[in-house]
Length: 148
Picture 1 (cartoon, one colour):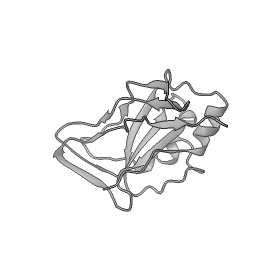
Picture 2 (picture 1 turned 45 degrees about the horizontal axis):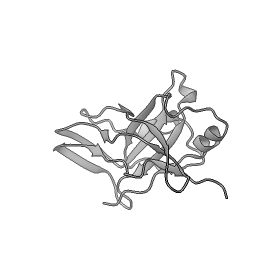
Picture 3 (picture 1 turned 90 degrees about the vertical axis):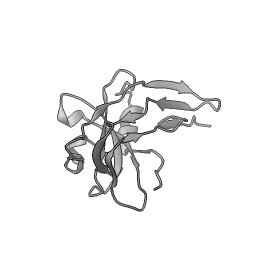
Picture 4 (picture 1 turned 30 degrees about the vertical axis):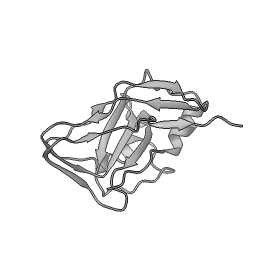
């Protein structure tokens, strides 16, 4: 199983550039999606565009991102990071994608941030009576490189 690098959605990048988000203050949700979803960074903009593909296993529930920080690395890149995602111990959960989106009371404002493909080239991965955790890269979720 190979996990992809974090892929941001185009709408998220656009809205970040406009200053519409506060990563530290906004509630960020983390969800698991099934292999039935076909990612499209250009056309998938809000949670409602992809929510039909969310995991429906009885042991599964979305989690709220915790431990959010923004730092700058030694190369001048802005780094978004957070705590690892723990979807439960001794659970039966299957899915292929881990998706982050900004939660909001207004459905049309639940913008997708990005996702990881947890099994590049394959289908759903399964946790059967086991932990279902996702370890965020030690270098952070994403790094923004400054312009030259």
